[in-house]
Image 1 (cartoon, rainbow, N blue to C red):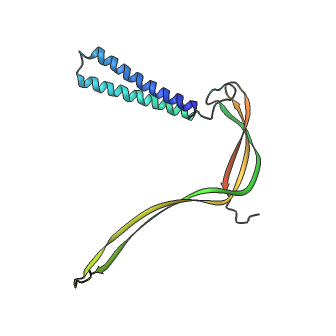
Image 2 (cartoon, rainbow, N blue to C red):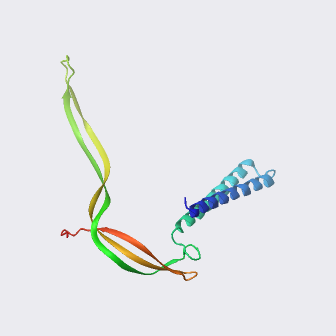
Image 3 (tube, helix red, strand yellow):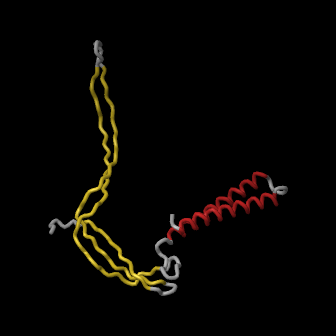
Length: 174
């Protein structure tokens, strides 16, 4: 687990715990003056608000992963300056496919049990559905980009390689 996620979880716990503590303090001070049901509702509202605030802190912490500057370490500092194609080639890649099917119909027939002279007619409808997924190797165009970034706080500059694969629908292959 990355340090950013751990920090977000700690922030969530502190916020929810702080709201609960505040609720208990209010409960202790206001207990003689307010009905018990009102205090319970107040405590629940504070806990929910604290939990929501903590969840927002966790989400904000997680979304900042990968956007920090390697020099100053500040989050949401990465700004794309430009990108350049380093390599582009046709090759094969693995793609995931999925399909969903649904069918319905009617059935009818007769049945009899051994030793019995009675025949019974049966009819009804049937419905079925299902999904399946699989992986297959397909022609792709693999493009390698050199991404140029700068920090919006300390103006440090750095580069990273990014690879993108797109399925090649061109019929003619080399």
